[in-house]
Length: 166
Image (cartoon, rainbow, N blue to C red; front, side, top):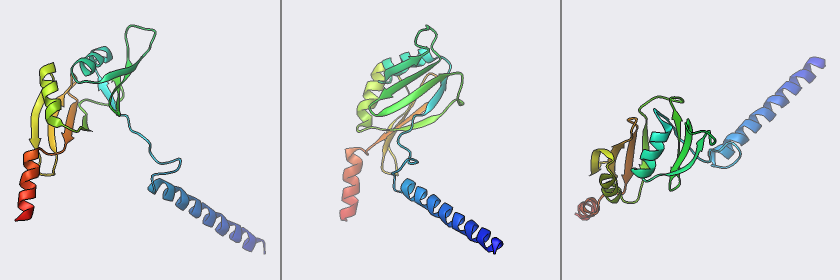
């Protein structure tokens, strides 16, 4: 009798555990619940946080959110942002160089003009890609690549529309 009770308890425990796990995955799969990811902030390993803050704010159009240690002159960690995108900068720690990050914008060509005027290191000018995006590549001081994409050019849109009607 005792072994049947133990077996029944084990089976009941397994059923409860499996249904609990299934419920947690269902919440996660539906983008809700306490285990669903809510944001992402890449951490870039940089040679100098202070130089990177200056470059990202004066050349690449980001804002400085905060730096650390706040009470010292030599910063070793910082947060920068542009729109809804946040990036952490870590001086000679937390990762390797270079890292590629993909950013979405509404007008790649306008951003290209702004970056060219500011002296950004543009390694690939805006171009329409076969996958339906217009993209350019920009490198920061540490060789990290900002792959910036948006909607294809109007020319590309009109060509696609023309082909569809044929």
